[in-house]
Length: 456
Image (cartoon, rainbow, N blue to C red; front, top):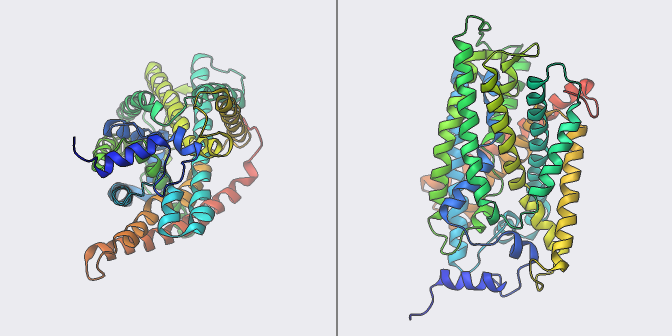
């Protein structure tokens, strides 16, 4: 047999617990980010993290943009994120080939920008964004459960926070799956579910659009000049959240060596689903409801407590959404799991020894309980969605990848790549700042309607 290749040596080191500079991996990287997956598994993880329930808010974003601007933003979001995610993947592959495989976003920031950037900027923002996604998924799941309940029992009196708590208990169980790789079958089912509820939503829109009782459609953008401007940036933040990922390095870390080319294949699978679902739901929802599209498209199918599409179709859409939200929540819980295991577990002990199982069980249960409590206390998904997108997903997924690539590969300043990446980083950093201000403004405006544990 010949000498082992660099990728084979890298895989051996990771199995042994050695990182790229001869130190031991912490328990979080060793246990949660196990590198055993194929490009298909990578595609399943990517699809669950990107093609999730927030895509049902795309018609709402179109209501603030109109047809032309809405389609332009949707196309730009798809092109830029696909490009940016490939930039991150290429940077990760480059460092792996150099013998320094990076497993986490903060590892990339530390190696490329310096320790302060990883510890005080990228790391905290990624953690907040991902845990915010867990909270938002838990809230949406509670709302889906309540919708199913009200369809089955019109006039029912059970409050929203009860359903949020029920979902939280289920999520506590699902969160005990030990590693990111162990979610591969869950995420395959999730891929099928997102196709299912998107199909149901589009079918419902077509039904409403051709119904004799179809609501009047108005495609004009409402409000005065300032309201429209704020609405545009709020809509951009919503679209950014829909395309957002924030865990590309962690997903690529689950891929077995050699890693070259596997992420690109996974992204192609993911974006085939993205194009199928995002564009169909956005166009069908806006066509059917115009500027009356609500923050979650499925809410438009209920008028005065009665479904305006076949009840079985709405039930299927809500059920598929509910089931997929459990997968989305547990995927975005992985960075939290990784951090907790890094602090609490012993990498020298086995993953399934009592020394590591007990802290894992307790810490993950408490993390889910905390997220569930926040979701029940502050049940306003639309405002949360925009803020998460503006504050986290826009910089992490649009601006940072271009910066990482330019610093790592140092493309010629006379070439197109350098200036394209620079333009992406500058434009989307500015958009992130403006959209964050807009999102905070919307929260302030809506603060008068906020009520802890509200039954919305």
